[in-house]
Length: 162
Image (tube, rainbow, N blue to C red; front, side, top):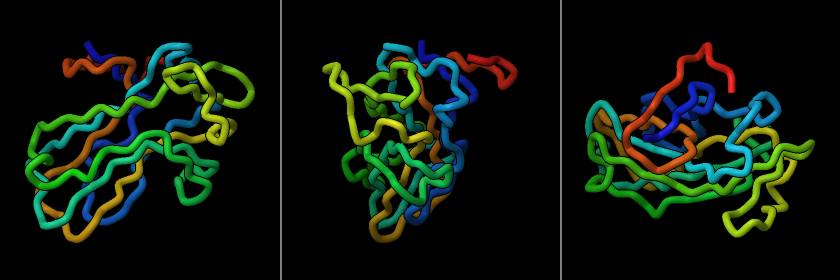
């Protein structure tokens, strides 16, 4: 069962037709426990229909010193270029990020235990959608951070603090 904490959401049914940052970010200074020593994944799902068009979308998980992800982005994980045949309603993707250890610098560690040093200290984590050519349709992307790759979510309400 996937654990989906409300405050770990990145996109909620976000329409993606051009390059865009996720509509929400996780502020690592506010999160009390982002999988302390536990692997963290980004879970992406296409909702509300299919994403169509001749183009593709490359989904990225990034950290940044900006809450808008506009500057200082550091790539943590990236999907291959996804085409319309892969972006159908209810399709799901997981990207492994690594794991976190609490500290003053919000250190992110790769799964082999080595720090991803250039990402250390960057305050925000979010998704970035890199669009090539034209995409459209009724499909939207919902994205959240989670502690496992189960497709059966357990969603905690917004009033629950981690």
